[in-house]
Image 1: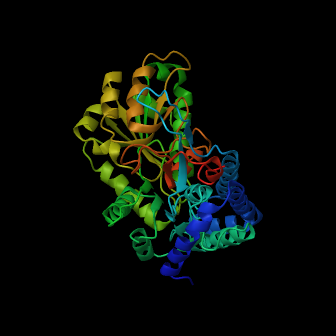
Image 2: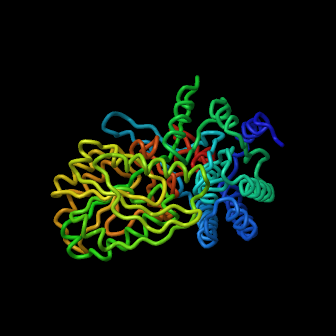
Image 3: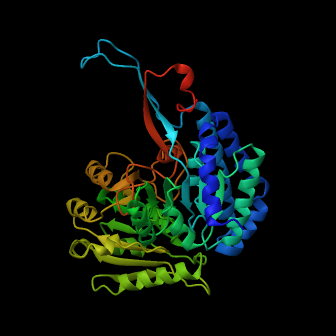
Length: 459
């Protein structure tokens, strides 16, 4: 078993050959990882099902997402489109005086510590988005595995290690650590230069504080909690009520509500009519007992608030919770914003009735930050949409119209982030090819001969 120090030292040594690796070499690393995961998908899915209680179709879909992600990053690495390189050619007539030749390129930030997530055992775990993002720009990766699925983490790590070696990656470019204590020690170690995290607000804040309190503070990219508000406009309700209710019911119970993008707060013009149209089905068991206990505790805390009542519950299984819809009104939320800022990580949401769009916008102002915000309006020409889009753009990283926030596609234009407490770095994304920019440090090169630039320009 490798010790923490040996893993960190190997990553530290690997930082130089990893940074010098060509785009072709780095792309080959990522494709090798994808091929290795695909080749062992049956074994991995079986382990994941045993340790997470997630259904097999969901797990197979997540493996496909994970390998697609790695191959997409490989394509962008080779094309040179992964990073935003800017070029200013020398200009003796530049208005503020002669301008030198400048190229703003990137260098790898150095070894990256990745904290794996519990709710995505593949896509946000050992070989997930943070790992792929860091390797794509030439950074060694140290993964702190999640205790919720240790067998899967080890099996995945073995495949990644073997795949990287077969592709000629430097020794030490990938490693794993397992205990919480090692994770805490690693984030404070001078050999780690950045960290990525997906998890709870409390856990992320604690690690963020450690990263910031180092003698040499490092960037900490935490994707934390979010209640993902939804506003149903009066015109949208009149036109699409059945479609809206069906879409919401599927979205907030998907994955037993264990998605960071679950619609947790829904502002409705007619709460009673909304509930009358709902029919809740059984949900599958939660990831583990710890998460189930946390969900039940948070749900009970919200139910105990005088202004909140239970509107509807679904059937409870032997090992699964009951999907639950709570209700309150906008006046109560404005008096007690915690109603709409408390994340219930499970199959529960709050319906908030409002008088008019002005009051709905006021409620949105009580949400400090979110990963997503959604408008359910008319199919065309909704009079309230412009005002809501403006308000939502200030509080969320992704603003959605007439779709639902669960399901975060991996693409070039994706933005998965938002103001605190959704993330610790609202100008970045943890999903999509732009996620690689977190682990590449910009450097301006002045008057540099062209033959010396290819490594730093990612070409």
